[in-house]
Image (cartoon, rainbow, N blue to C red; front, side, top):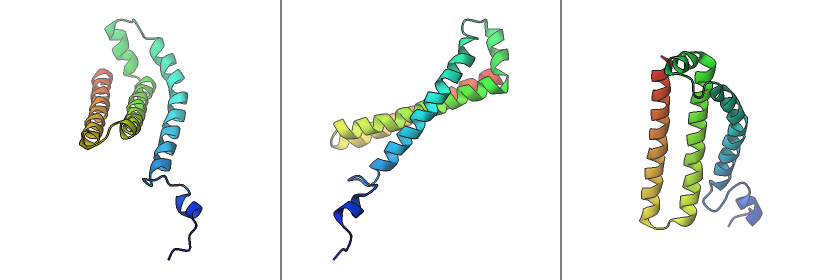
Amino acid sequence: MSYMTARKRATGQGSAREGTMRHWAMTKSSVGLLILTPIFLLTFGGILGAPHDEVVAYFARPFPAIIAALMIVAGFWHFKTGIQMVIEDYVHGTAREYTIVATTCLSYAAIATGLFALARLAL
């Protein structure tokens, strides 16, 4: 016999007991991207259309490289979490697990590729 009320058992937890954590993760990454996107556009916009040598010299400096790396990681992490929520809502059966694994691998591969390209450009 449980002495907890239904509200007490449900507080802070969805039916799968992780919905609130995912919502907060999406909220935090959204706020991070909200702050990071204008900074990225200001740093990246000035070098857009420049010759290759200038771009390499620009991204060899720490601030633009760090901003670009943070944008890559935060953007694809937000994508991974968001697309997982969409897949859980609209895809059913075994295809759900395969699709979640595929999109998670895709987002991690995109993060790795972006960071590798940035490292090759900056170093």
